[in-house]
Image 1 (tube, rainbow, N blue to C red):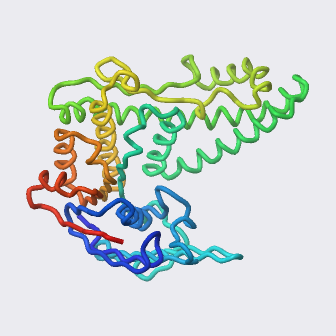
Image 2: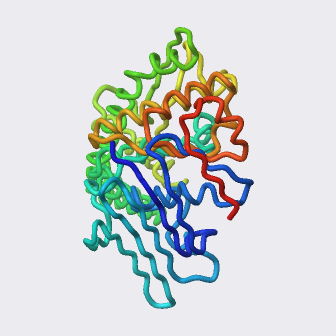
Length: 356
């Protein structure tokens, strides 16, 4: 499998000028809090995916600088990204083996999966976080979903703006009709994509979770739509009409995929309210393992696995399960305590110490 051999950073986050080399297997990045460990993962993520997982491009600049550059050797390919900002212009450019690119296409992005502490709170976060999780994964698997979501959000914004105008009922219904038809068409496609993804997650969830827990369990993932009925298209149109008066009072559209959610049941009980801390972490680890498989299958390549300080959140059994998973990928793990991780790899690892 192709992997990152080296990384060179200039004016990126906390790094002025820094070079590091990686092994093809497990790389453990060790250092105190604030030493730039996560910044290394972020730089690799930008090279692979084209953007950061925790900020805008301008946030990646080292303080006081107006440009940054990231260079990386991935297999036989040299990849780089340069960002420059001044008072009048912003320029971002990728280089792939010397060929200039304004942005990375889906085919040019490298498969990468990130697991960070925030992900461990997914089941208890507001519904918007779970929608974002599904949609972000769909965009990575199927790039046309980004256009579909953008079109839906544009129509939703227009519809909400019209609701806030508080026009007479007959006039408002006439003006909303065409927007509602487009809204329903796009909503139906979004929900169908999400439900197919949920089915893919569901297909493997019980087996993966049971292997982590080391005894049989049943995991059920259920998409929760704000629209009932067998025919989604007709049901959503009816709901939009029936909720019109209430939505005008509120100034927003109260039904549709932008209000949907999903739930996870563990052995028949809602995980968000009944799962223990360890069970919750096993469920999120389960989702990440399935995500790795889906990304690998879709892009026909082995993903880069980035683990940002998640070992400290897991007990010994779950650390062992995550370590077994990591051995199959080029993996970068950040930690303040290398001893808590090293014991799970029995010599098969590369230590990177950072004191930046």
